[in-house]
Length: 181
Image 1 (cartoon, rainbow, N blue to C red):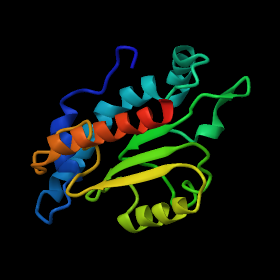
Image 2: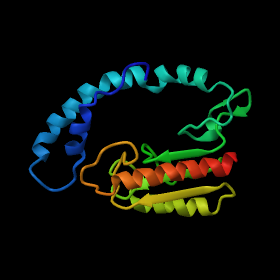
Image 3: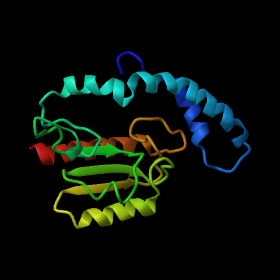
């Protein structure tokens, strides 16, 4: 992040902004959205892909055991893949099943069933079905009651959050141990 993280005050704002329970809080959502944009705009400017990719390439170099959250075959250097296995928590910005079909490396996904940012569970189930026919190792673990960011953020409504984040951490470590020996 090169010394420019997102403000920690956004932790208090994103919760009410993404709250889906019916209430009069929707009136405040515009205010929360404005605060989120104000806080996140500098973060995305300084940490977007265009700004961070040169730093990432230097960091990763020629390490083939690198971990990335992208289609593994899309970014290569000197013909060598940068990724041998992938693990992602609460993926977003996906278009399913199209983004699930070209998987070429082992992929493990941890996702919450209350995640409003990732694709709906029906599409996640479609992704599971698509991956069943592949020769590549894949797994999708759905964590009940978990929302977006359950592995790294606080959600006061989810009493099992700590346990679920630890299970997702174990899922990642087991996945990489299996593929990296």
